[in-house]
Image (cartoon, rainbow, N blue to C red):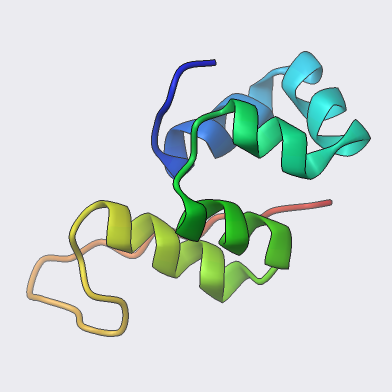
Length: 80
């Protein structure tokens, strides 16, 4: 999988049994292979939903904790 965003990677894992198995077998290797940046890799490995949310927001240039009018809250459930 080429370098990409955390949200794209999580969506891929949600629908691909191959990606799910790769993550289960070796999470660090799977996210390294996905080309995620260091902050995104650390967030995923932390298994902290707040850290994962903040990493997704940061990739989009949105400061975590700062909402603007019209912002949409995205909730991602990660089951590991």
